[in-house]
Length: 157
Image 1 (cartoon, rainbow, N blue to C red):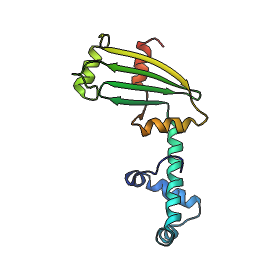
Image 2 (tube, rainbow, N blue to C red):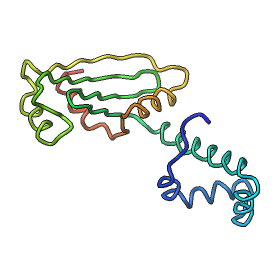
Image 3 (cartoon, rainbow, N blue to C red):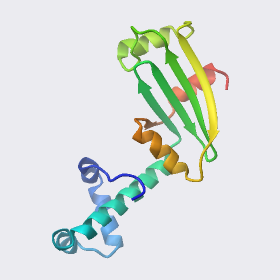
Image 4 (cartoon, rainbow, N blue to C red):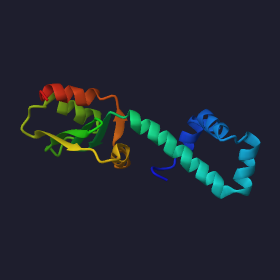
């Protein structure tokens, strides 16, 4: 397995897609029930293959990621060749940017000396999707990139 198995909730959400996946392998509903009971290792393998296909599709489309912690925000823009980072660090122990109040403080105090903005870029590896998945595993979420683009304009990148 290249990525991670989807959760039960994700499988439920993708129920029809999973049925289509099984049908593409000429596995009927009755055959699937039989496989689950009599060949659980084959069923596990099918779940893993489907999970990887879903992750591959999602990661192929990913262009932006965000990761928030109490005093830092990491914003990523992913191209075919580079992983661009804008990092915002708040050096004020009273501010937690994961809360509405802390985030509002950041918006109103962006030019405060206790707020540092950093940028960085690095080449993606031969497996772009694996790079993205590693960030997701660390807590980053795929976004539409509005926050990245806001800071990109602010920093004149």
